[in-house]
Image (cartoon, rainbow, N blue to C red; front, side, top):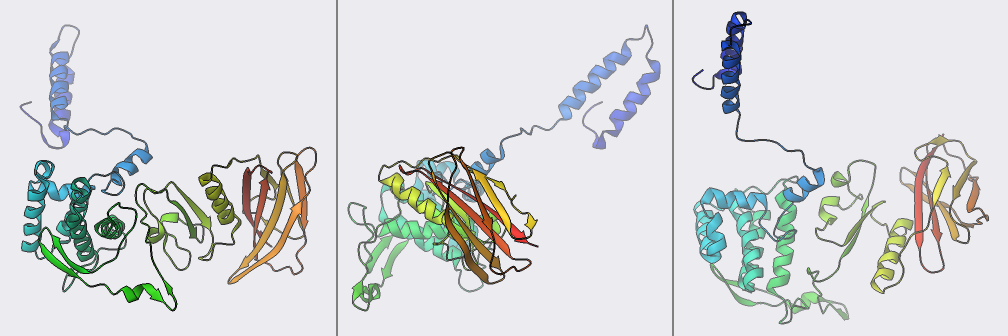
Length: 387
């Protein structure tokens, strides 16, 4: 064999052709087989595959100026395509100027705009130059809301969320106070890498009646952020919403914690939301935020049953156990039970639910909370359907 041949057919024919010649005293067969093996090995591609934990892969794919402090993969591709990957490391401002010229020549190419937004933000952070932060905001806005025949990014384009966050973070950094502790909205002429920009700002926009907004505190990397997001239904969270706001819009990268609450938009009364707010507040004042053992034994989540039915569970003796039941059906959401349950010396509790009105098909969301005097708490939730 002189080289790699298509579909491996010559290789297969070679094996068939030499096989009949092999005999006890004929060693050419093994030699030819060894040569064939080497030839096939030489035909193997230089690219291999290694199995990796999906979380590691997702983390690598999600890299960006805001999550890992480095360019995202789409931006890296633009740098490679323009031959500017190494240049940006050595001379970032010259590389950005070259990329800006390429973007203008391409009529506001969205790939270039996104890359310019991300790279300008990164350089603004590294060089502490507000002009590059404001340039990042301009590029991000142009990417999100193109003029004329430009096409806005699709709702499933991963750059959409990054660009929206870049716009907000860039404005926060561009209008930061001297010590960086506040955002100071103001108008005037600001110098950007590609020229001056006029910003109009009316202080009256901060007033509502006899009240005025002031002291805008940025959500910066130095500030701890906890997120609670409501999502309705049982489908994939990433594609869900709370009936008003999509998860993809509410999600913020880089937060300390994110709790998904199965709820409609007004989630402030949900027991899980209340517990999470309580946990966050206690955490930030240095109080205990531990949990206690808690399990609902019956009924089983997702079960269809006929009321009255018993709710039984186990925890540890001495804790306070409360129960709430929310009836859900169509637009109906009614609190139908809320009570404190006695706990036996064995840590068991029981409640018999007897609704005043039995409606087939109604979904009952059952929430049991166990808490101790020193602040430890656990919540268990399940849903059953009246049949």
